[in-house]
Image 1 (cartoon, rainbow, N blue to C red):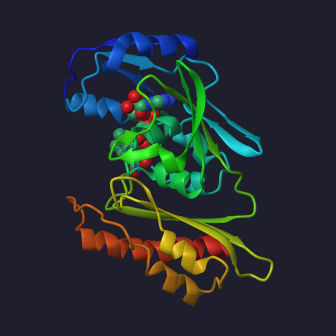
Image 2: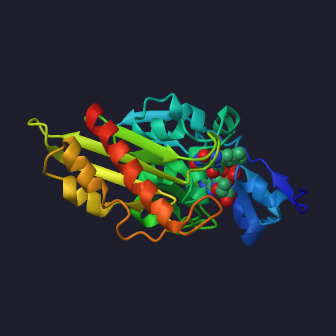
Length: 280
Ligand SMILES: Cc1cc2nc3c(=O)[nH]c(=O)nc-3n(C[C@H](O)[C@H](O)[C@H](O)COP(=O)(O)OP(=O)(O)OC[C@H]3O[C@@H](n4cnc5c(N)ncnc54)[C@H](O)[C@@H]3O)c2cc1C
């Protein structure tokens, strides 16, 4: 439980943080809330030689609204919970306990790329993006291009995520259903849903994201296709939710077999869609 020896810096500007990351080479790591990285270091599953702490870099926290919602990468989960961000707030409220939500950050969670974490599937379902600053400037990475494999994202080793962009949730209803054994555990499976109703009450548009149903967060495309443009009543939702596990290959783990996860996906999908439809 004692990490390997490492150096530590806490730069006071983004440019200094980028320089420290570059100078530290491939064994340098950014430190945000530390709630994923430090446990890995204690277990010696990660052994960075340099930690570049982002907490003194100005401008990386807070929520701004102009068109899209812009959330600073170092914004703690707690601020996302209280920030009135629809689906993102609902999902963040289920992350672990208050202590973790006070320290863990939205940028750290997305950069970590754990398919069992709550925010990756939410970003994917909302078709959001992250802004990454690197030595060659800034780029926007769409959620669909962000998550490559288990704990692997397309964020470069020399890049820092500065901002998370979420399309404005106005006019959409949201639902979040998560199944875990203890309230502070990661999801065995979770499903997030966003629904937009047409004036006649039918489904104008719908997005469904799946957590822990594969090595990356997933969209439940078959469910979305079944509902989009059609009825949004209990029967239509139940029938569409039966397709929630289509095309997924969830790995078995200590908590659940693959078949049980598929069952959970179907049940949770129905619940999340019912909640979203009622709120739309
Ligand atoms: C007991 C416990 C229970 C938890 N339960 C849940 C849960 O139910 N659901 C859930 O979603 N999460 C859960 N978490 C994880 C928590 O949400 C973490 O806060 C989150 O996964 C990582 O955020 P962090 O800010 O702590 O990142 P860190 O641990 O500091 O960093 C994680 C990784 O991201 C990189 N990184 C961090 N910031 C940036 C950046 N700005 N740009 C580029 N790379 C960056 C780091 O280098 C590191 O590789 C739990 C954690 C604990 C300790």
